[in-house]
Length: 189
Image 1 (cartoon, rainbow, N blue to C red):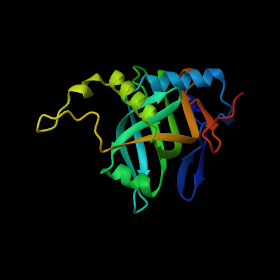
Image 2: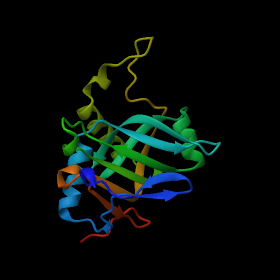
Image 3: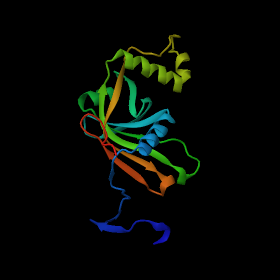
Image 4: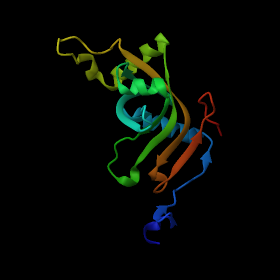
């Protein structure tokens, strides 16, 4: 078959491609390092929440990682915060810039957005966010007041349930799927 694409199947009148699957993997040291490399190299992620009418809503947010753990903030007045309060399930995509498609990598994950009330974690989040995005320290509103940090923000931690780590340097379509337990811990190799 040209280009080594997977075979296709007919399904209810449409053509459906088979997905590339490497099965479910345990978290190896190599995979853990790849995850840290990806999340540490990115400032923003796409996060999908569930709207009241059941439709997904995708937004781009800045985030930080503390190891493999992902944290982000949003105003308590946003639809994201309202969606999460009603249904904490989220899907996230994180992808660093790449010059060549064959060098692409990224993470797609599902989990729960959980509010963080720990002041030490919040301070570390703000420190890391300013390290990644120093221009935040100088942004002001229309009245000249600094907007960061904003007391109307809610800090969230993502408790992961599954993660797909794409790494095309291992072959086009290569993805490792990792499942997490109810505490957000991956099974380790």
